[in-house]
Amino acid sequence: MTAVWRYGRPSLVVLLAGLAVGVPLWLVAVTSAKPQAEAIEPNLDLPRHWQPSANYADAVSQGEMLRGFLNSLLVVVPSVVLVLLLGAGAAWVFARRKSKLVSAAYALCISGLLLPPAVITIVMELRQLGLAGTRPGMIAVYTGMYLSTSIFFMTGFIRAIPTELEEAARMDGASPSRIFWRIVLPLLRPVIATATIMVMLYAWSDVFYAFFVLGGGDRATLPLNLYQVASAQLYLNNWHLVFAYVVVMSLPMVAVFLVGQRKIVSGITSGAVK
Image 1: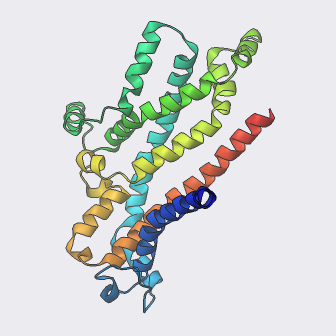
Image 2 (image 1 turned 90 degrees about the horizontal axis):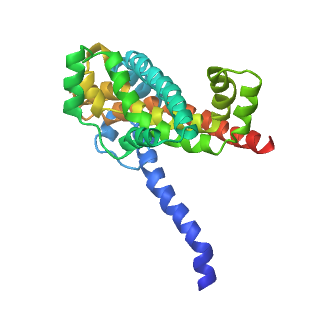
Image 3 (image 1 turned 30 degrees about the horizontal axis):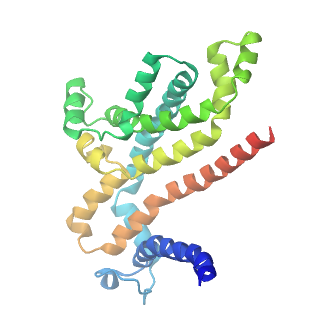
């Protein structure tokens, strides 16, 4: 009995995880291929009449997905770049400097992992700065929200990098900026890939903060645009179009995850060989 439980427990965990992830994905996929009459009450049944191409075409055209996709790129990509660059620079200082002031600054920076952002305060500050309802304001919010996560991961990774590499570069006359760009940053590729995936997944699917900061309109991102069109008269009970929108909106993040996953594995392998 013990042997059966020992080998059956991993299979049970995998089965439960597969059901928890697979059932919602299946519901979204099959509903996005159904006509409206079959999709009024979403279920796990296969469509009796398949029309995925028409549903996806209507979701892209009627849901203004191209504009939402461009708005999401203009907000998410600069946010990710700022989070990675600022996080890597701060993490390098926190990992190499030893003092009470640096330790206090590190604790303050990673406190964002535990303290949730105050939406009302953020909106009021953005209004005072004239950034409310603008993309730079949204970029600043995402950068501040996810910078703590980037600093936390990168600091621990840099501490595991031998300091002899940097000391050898200093002896050769390399400046601190050159050491950072040519030695430290390339070694951070695995953790950069991980941070990129995490930040992009959170920012790409965010509706809450985008609703308060951007407020919709021409600057609405994909999730915010989905919320607006799903609440409109056009999309009431049109679950086939809503789920088709969700599928198309998720495809870029699936591609980022697949590419980033390969980068993580290759970065760890190259580091082990060296």
